[in-house]
Image 1 (cartoon, one colour):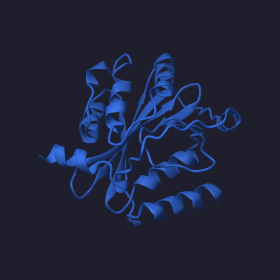
Image 2 (cartoon, one colour):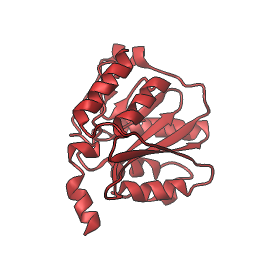
Image 3 (cartoon, one colour):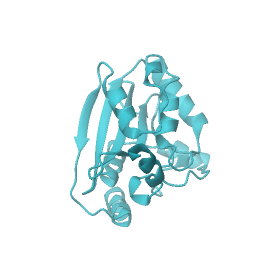
Length: 203
C-alpha cells in the first residue's frame, strides 16, 4: 500500500514532477546556452526524497558528455535562461546545477546527488538517449530515467522501476559512486522556490 500511495501522490506539485508537456526551445537559444564542463564524463543521479514519508518524490539525471545537460523527466524546474527540449535542460553550468539542487531541497525534502564517472562513449550514448526520450508524463520520472540508464553498458542491472528510492539504492551500489546529500530549511512552497531560483540566476 505504501508504494501505491506513492504513485497516487507523485503528481503533487511538491513532489517536483510537472506535466510532461512537449517543449522545443529555438535552436539559437540552445546553441547560446550550450555548456561544456571540464570535468570527466559522468552521470549524476538526483533523487528528491520526502523526509516525512521516507519515499522518493522525483528523479533526474545530469549528463556530462560533449555538453552538460539535465534529463529532468516531468520536472517542474524552469527559468527563461534555461532552454528546454522535451525534458532536456541545456546550459547546466555550476550555478544552474546549484539552483536546481536548492530548488528541490526544502524543509520537507532532501536532494541526494550520486555521481559516477563513465567512459566518454557511455556519456554520449546517455546524451543521445535523453534527446530521444521526452516528453514524459506525470509520475513517470523514475521509470524514464531508469529506462535510459538500463540501455547503457554497465548499468543494465539497474532494471526499470517506478520508485525513486529504489533506483537511488541500486545506483548507489555501483562501484565508484560518490554520494552527497543536500538539505535546506527554507519554505516548502514551490512558488517560493521558483522565486529563489529567479533571484539566484538573475542576481
